[in-house]
Image (cartoon, rainbow, N blue to C red; front, side):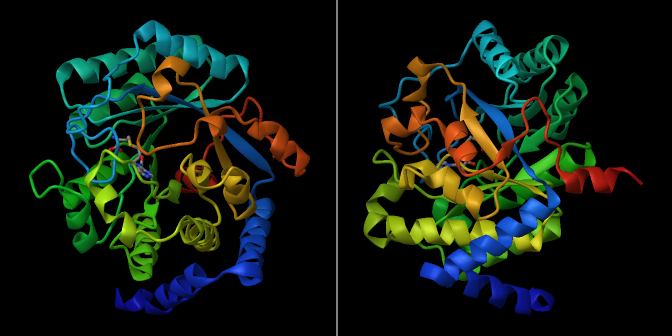
Length: 345
Ligand code: SAH
């Protein structure tokens, strides 16, 4: 990483900012976003299954959490949620789930993507974890436009602390998946969690440089939030304070906006776990995509990646954004400018 050393030091300094110095950074990043893209894109989020074969130490839907009711929405329920995204002119939907690798699951998702594409004018983002090249190929052929696979951490040292040491949790496989997704022509997204126990500022800086090096088209990056039914909860004394996590995450959004002005950056849902104004703050720091939850109400509590306060689920972010003078791109697919530039030669 020697050639990136000045950038790395710059990012670390940006992550350390607080108070008015942090606000100045957010304003710079916000101005860069405004110059590039005036409007905020919407994504409907459908959390369609919490069944997961993985056991990540930080995540509430890990397979060892037996206190959770496991659900998978039916095709009809998913289509109803997609219909709402279409009616509310969100332009795109993200279908997210735990990680399941099976022919049945591949077929199920393939069929849903095809049906959504046949019935609605919506861009489709999948976020279903690590899969084989062949599964990704089938999902792409079915009509998927984009894929979100967060790297979680690009540091082998930290990744090993965040996951069990087995063949199911291998950082290099996640990197391989991101390469496959790009090869297959997906708009490819990644991301990381900020403020994890054992994470250093240099780790976060390296994550941002990893995104630059991997030439990603979009990013979902937000604060780590605790879940009491996970091994990482035991490390809560070592976890940065909520305020520090919020500042570091906002600073990271801004730093990434300055590094990669033309990518889509989502105001990750976990921002709301730390502040009732979390997503608005992320927009003010350079994010340009807002996720709106379309998961049926009765299933939301079971899709608990982390513990989120109930009242934030219903908050009307759209009227808030309007109040701040933002224009929302209703009915637009919201492609990443970086992806477009790379593909129009
Ligand atoms: N299983 C899929 C996606 C579902 S989880 C996959 O492997 O890609 C979606 C994202 O939630 C994860 O990528 C992770 O970054 C985030 N997440 C999980 N636990 C979290 C926590 N405790 N705090 C904040 N974000 C978390």
